[in-house]
Length: 207
Image (tube, helix red, strand yellow):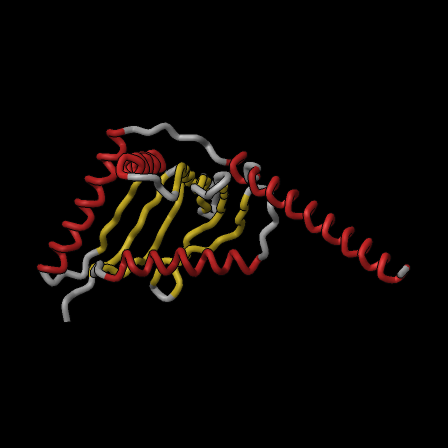
């Protein structure tokens, strides 16, 4: 009986410990990630959103014209941090008007550093409580393709395994590949500097 009673007590203590861990995890998950303290808030701006759209449209037209003329031409796209965030805010507002979006809020910062880092803070709609996430990364060119490299990832205050960084990198690069698949362009450089990103590439000629 004493052995059985001891097992029951032990199992009870384990159960209480698991509950404490779960509650602590939920609390940490609900907190704001450390990365947010490094992010500069940016107000929505309709003119900046329109500027972003116009630059993208001009960039695509320039590529199409070069390809039609059989030219292998260097093209550049330069967009500012303000323009990127304005476009994101516009798209999120559009999503909210048509239903409940997955992403409630997102801020992108293009850092002024030699590493060309970018920061992203986002709040994701999750039943019970919004997930607050933060990400620090940079863009590198690997085998003539832009590749996102994640250096830090936070979910609230929860410590996340390094393997999750690799998973996020794979997902981000999968999205990048899809976006570039139909674009007749070889990206040669991606530079993040002075709160703006500059993408340079060579148009592809039709074989």
